[in-house]
Image (cartoon, rainbow, N blue to C red; front, side):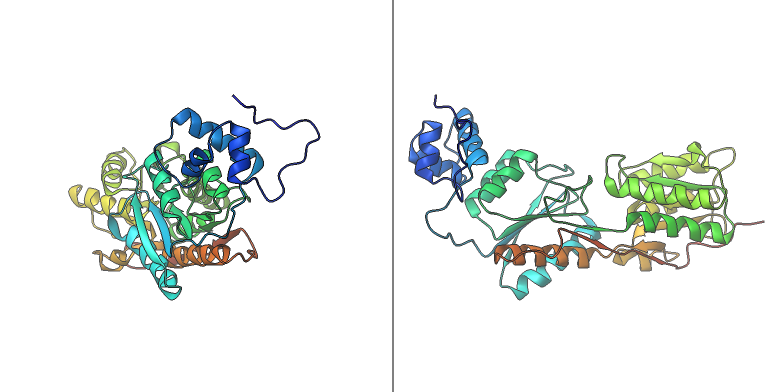
Length: 345
């Protein structure tokens, strides 16, 4: 097997290696390299890994400029609900302006795409990839980069590096403003139902919640903090549990609107009225929030604008233009409606 390590002091390939050079370094045929480069599946895993290693080390120079398909790949952890629709509408608006079609992939709750996904992307050769509340693995990122396929992270689950473009929102500010609103109303026992502890957005909202309590001189009570998974079932289960405490909260800050709706149901089961007996704040401000009974006080997260910004990044990179910045942070805003009020005396 041919070694892929270049001699000490040997320069890297200028602009990347050709298919012929990659084949020579890997000790395989040019046809095999071509299959790997073009995302074909009929290559043994060991051989594919060897060729990918050579491409990572030496880069890949295309013999001629290759036209990209007029596609944008959008990867969502799940397609159900208003969250996904807001993102899709934001992508479609900008993609439509540039005559790009949209390809959707659902990860069914996972946050990392599988092998079949990356093979499909390499075969389709889209203008770019947008992943929402999920991210390619490091190996998948290298495969995309080696083929010149740009990708953007939207609402990333972990802190993104400056190497890859990302679009996020001011989650810390949102957590701070939601909690401060409840404090200003006079609440002191304020519960929090978070998202997954591994999610960057959830950690930032929790930090904002803690900062607001600390600034008000209110001790953080661990019994009032529950870890959820951004869905209605969590809001219902944790809402029930919190309302059964010997000293229940007078307000609950749910880290997304879905969990807030679960809290609504838990309050109904307990015979409590919102906001007379319990104040509730959500996060996202998805369209159904204004139609809840009572209308939900929540933190507006500009999902459409985030998705549109990510698509604009893809268009810019696909055209070969530089980005003014790799990370875009949009602002959140508290929207006060009818689900919050001063606690009962």
